[in-house]
Length: 229
Image 1 (cartoon, rainbow, N blue to C red):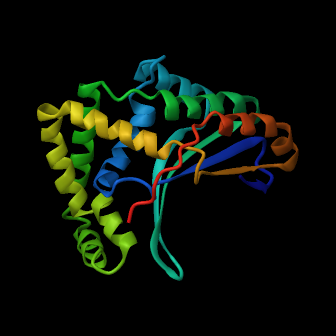
Image 2: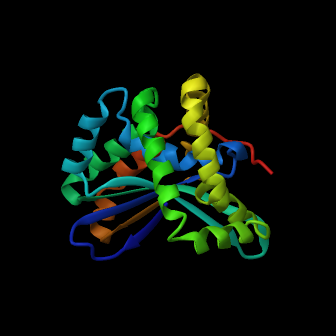
């Protein structure tokens, strides 16, 4: 747990970094869609419309982003899925409950909703090819030299586009396999093992909500995933 005592006008900023180091490499291109699915497909208790309204009414936003970086002195990249959220002091408990529901109770079995997300990702990548061609070409070249850039290529470059196109077809031909892959990602990533909770607010409020933050972490499963090479 990392805490930052800063004046934030009674707003709590939360970052939960989940370790992707133990994830099967073939599943890495699916992680960006998994991150969207956590907050955009509803939970076992709420449909996605109700869950979205709850997020928007009680927080300043909850979303997931990939963090991929080389590290000095090592060939192994740093791979994290970072769930970010913010809320006022009066809504900290609501925010923690929402993040916990997203991680533990998100449902992935709405095929049409997931198909819509896949087609949105596909359209976004295809639309960016021409105006951002230099970016795709540069990332493709760098992917031959560092592990971090190779993974970035498969998650956000041309390889990602090829994967998304195949996934769009696989939704019809192998939906059970897609669901299984999403659950494998959740089982591997959603764990206290290797997780980092980063909190920013003033010291008084950090101390006041310390039990709630501790309870949130204790609610995450303890899964020690084997590191992949």
